[in-house]
Amino acid sequence: MSIDLKQLKYFLAVAEEKSFSRAAERLHISQPPLSQQIMKLEAELGVRLFARTTRTFELTAAGKALMTEAADILARMRMTIDTIRQIDRGEVGRLRVGIVGSAMWGPIPGMLEEFQTKFPQVTWTLHESSPTSQYDALRAKQIDVGFWREPRLDEEELKRDNLRQELCFRENVCVAVNARHPLAQRGAIELTEIADEPMLTLTLDKSAAEPRYLIDCCVKAGFQPSIFQEATEPQTLLAMVGAGLGVALMPETTSRIGWPGVTFLQIKSNPPSANLYICYAALDDAPVVRAFLNILHPPAPVEDRGVSPEGTVA
Image (cartoon, rainbow, N blue to C red; front, side):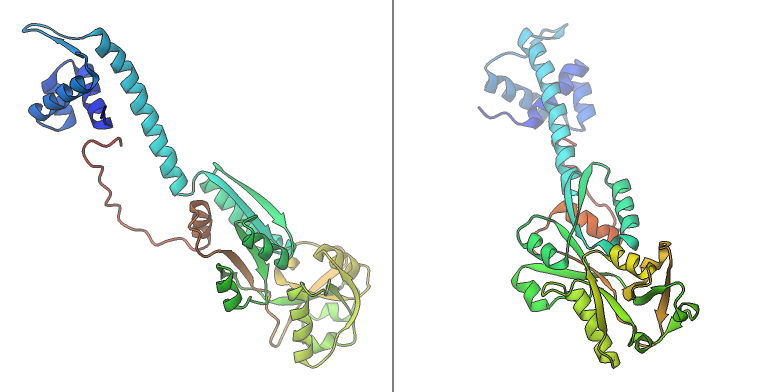
């Protein structure tokens, strides 16, 4: 048996209009091919769908039953097509976002709010972790995108693991000092002016690329910082700065939040970068990820030339 959706669509039009001529006009086709499709449908089913006389045009009992079923089938198919198109546009699904804690002080919350507004049917979750943990999670497909700061990862390593990294937001590093510190009145300083200050930093283990990068920037500026304490969370560093225990190098967006007892100073010459990057699977064209990336880089508008072919469910 070979029955297609076009035949059901044609049958339903005839059944609703109770006229082949009106149904043909509604479907924008001529009457002979419409009659042929109905006859083919009856032959496939082995039943008569219409009781035709010179004066009457009525559905048979089988025709009435098929009318109900056909309407239901076509409605469910339209819903299925709508769902598939929503999935393809990234409007339905799940997005798992890896992130470093300091990124939430910048533009990321606004980006997530925009994504939530445009794609309310997408469920998204945040997974706060180090860049190394995010990288491993991306490779294992445990998260869909990851956000971290400088330094930029090696392109060959990314290519080997089928990952792509893009610059999201440019940002510099600033110096967080205690509000009572003599430097706090300056507004902007040279990086070398904290050479003799106790340095507070995120944990300097082998996987901590960002804090080690900042230490290297200090060395390139001409001094070896004296590490006083390490911490796993940036807010812990700021709490220690507020207590007068030392200074810390932080992304400039950190200054948007009022931290008790902390003043943020710009770096005058060659400030280290705190640029934020996004990383995702290079070969996985996941619609939800594509929709998320379009929030970052909105595509140029294109003319819609789509045409629904005759006989399809639109």
